[in-house]
Image (cartoon, rainbow, N blue to C red; front, side, top):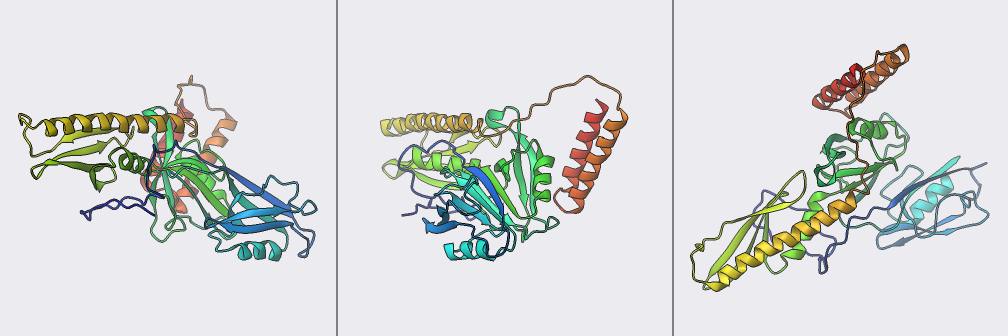
Length: 356
């Protein structure tokens, strides 16, 4: 039975929880993304891979020892994200048909291992054309615990290929087609250079805090005003309620609380006092859960820390590399993968690195 928060304001709708959180939210856990490709000698060549549908996902059910995919990295039980460039597979019959009808190469992208509810795994198809715009934009962000740097989703274009996925602005990118991006430009280049499927694995801070609040304050009334602000309240008798606002830091994902109760602090009600103390303790526990998740996430995110280097003259080969980097940035902006602001920032960074 799915659980939804009772929202009274229309300014914000939090993402849906996959299931009610009755136990401590599990730590962030991401799957391994595997791409397997085999070549057919003819259209009638047997691929030797079977599919089944379980829990709403298309999975590998069998791999024949005499098939062309027998020596691949595919395993029975892997979740199929894309088959021959097509994503959002509806049933196992469609997956088998794509393999059977492929004239030459058979390419299957799978996710191995389960993943936690705060991890988004999404795949879209570019239909064999690298020039197709996916409609997703990236920006630099602080790494877990506010240390180092990482890459986040800054915007998803309306009507783009990624518009109907589970990704949301603010998600921290863990990998693009099995590669952990070094920075926002690298992430955009990985998306641009893909010809078939684009698979993005990302961590959602908003889903992580939603799960943690649902668990810690499960005996309270919860109302979300935005993805970074919610109100929790509890009745303390005589028609009175204690109410607090939880404010989450966009950099560290930690929470601070503000008491907005109508009950004065000099109230003789022991129940109100105990409720305030209980809320403060719950906030500490909430931050403990989020901190534990951030520590775990730090092992999944490739963090890039800027290290100063000694200035050296730009040699001829370095100048060629500089022009190549600038040309890539121009192409990314032309294809809509970088905004003007992101282009200017990336260009300044490239020139600064070259000068230093």
